[in-house]
Image (cartoon, rainbow, N blue to C red; front, side):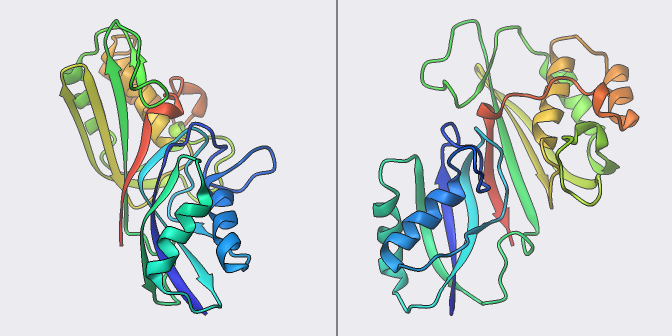
Length: 245
C-alpha cells in the first residue's frame, strides 16, 4: 500500500463543497472517481480543509492510498485527464509516509477572502469575490480584526452544523490589505470552525461600512452567541490558499 500526497486547485462554484454528499457533486467525489478510472481501486481522498459549497482553493492538500504500484509521474496526468472539464486540477503528486494524514498533520491553514469594493458590477470576478458598493473604512476594519488575534472562544462565528469538539481557536495572523478596488483579508490558524472565516469577514464588513462601532464589534465577539453575528460573507470570495505541515 502506497500513500500519495496531492496538491489541488479548484473553483468551488459548481460543487456542494469538499466533502462527499448525496445532494450534489463534491470535489472529493470528483477526485475519487478520477482515481478509480485509471487505477480501478476505490479510494477515499482525505483533504486538509473541508471547504464549504462555493469556496475555492489555490492550495488544498489531500492524501489517498493505492495498492497497485504506479509511478507518481503517471498519476498526475492520469487524475487530471479523468477529471475532464470540471474546474478541479491536481498540481502536484508526491509519495508520502503511510502515517501522513492531510488533515490531522496540518500545523497551519491560511484562508484569503476577496472583496471588490466599487460601484460597477463584477465581470471577471463574478462568483470569485464579494462585490460591495459602499466604500469601506479599511483602518476601522484593521482595528476590529486585532480583537480576534490570539486564543479565544469563537462561538459567535460558529455554524450550528459545526462538528468541532471545541469553539476555542488560536488566530495567529490576520492581514487586511487594499490594492485599488480589491480588499483582501487573510487569516492564519491551525484550524477553523465551520463558517468561521466567512462570519468574521461579515462582522468586519459591518465595521467597515459603519453599521457597527468598534464597541459593537467587540460585544458581538465576546457574546459567544451566534445570533449576535452579522450575516456571514458569501462563499464566493473565500479561498483556501496555504497548508503548512
